[in-house]
Amino acid sequence: MSTFSQLRFWFYRLTQKYTHWFFIAPALLTLLLVAIYPIVFSTGLSFFRVTFDSLQRPFVGLENFVYILTDDDYLKVFANTLLYVAVTVTGSFVLGFGVALLLRQITLGRNWLRVILIIPMTMAPMAVGLTWNWMLDPLFGLVNWFFTTVGLPIQTWLAQTATARAVVMLVDIWQWYPLVLLIMDAGLAALPRAPYEAARLEGASWWMIFRRITLPMLRPVILVALLLRTVDAFRTFDIVRVMTDGGPNLTTETLSLFLYRTAFNFNKLSRAGAGATIMLIVISIISALMFRYLYREVEQR
Image (tube, rainbow, N blue to C red; front, side):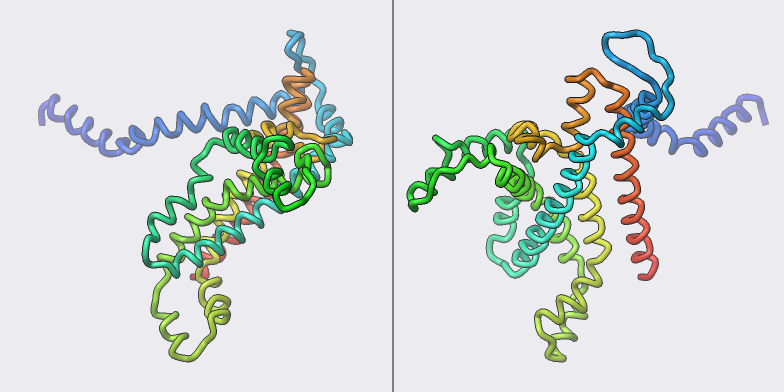
C-alpha cells in the first residue's frame, strides 16, 4: 500500500471515529458559554468581596453565605419564592391538566381551540405584566370597571398586601398553564386505547378509569411537566418586576428580583452571588429528586 493510500485510510478512520464531535461541538460550546461559565463565575464571586467601584477582591471565604443566610430580607424573600412556586406550579398544573382532559373530549375545532388556549404562553412576560397592570388600574382598568357596574367598590389590587401576591400568582398561572396543557395533551394522545375499552366493558366509572388507568400511565409525563414548571417558577422575574416591583413591603418579591437589586442597586455582587448559589443548590436538589423518581417510574415500565 502506498504512502498516499495509507494516509487516506487513516484520515478516513479518524473522520469516522470523531465525526460526531463535529456535530455536537457547537452545542457543547454554547452550553459552556451560556450556562456553565456563568454558574462557575457567580459561584466564584461568592468567596470574594467584589463591588463595581473597587478593583480589590479580597478573599472572604464563607462570609457572604453567612451574611445572606442570616439576612431577614433574604429569608423573607426565600419564603415568598417557595410559596410562589408551590401555588403557581400547583395552579398551572391543575388548570392545564383539567383543560387537557376537557380538550380530549372535543372533536370539532380542537386544533383551533388549542391554538387559542396557548396564546398566553406565546406572550412576553413583560407584555403580560403591562397588560394586566392596565386591566387592574384603579381608575381606568377593566376589572374595576366591572366591579363598579355590579355595585362593588374600586380596589387597588397591586397596592394592598392582601391582594397583590394573589393577583401576581394568578397572572403567572394564567400565562403558564398552556405549557402544562401542551405536555399533558401530548401525553394523553399517546396513551393506548385498549385499557380504556376493557375498563368500559367492565362497567368502570369515569373516576375509576382516571384514577386507575390515566394517572398511573401519565405519571412520567406529569413529573416532566412539574419539573419544567418548578424550575421556571423559581426564575420568575419579569412579571413581578413590571406589576409590583416586589411590593408592597416585599410581599411579592422573588429571589431573582431580590438578587438583582442586591447586585445592581446595592452594589453587593458577592452577596448576590452567594444568594444565587444557594438558590441553585435548592433547585438542583428538587430537580434531582424529581429526576430520580422519574427514572424509577420509567425503569418499572
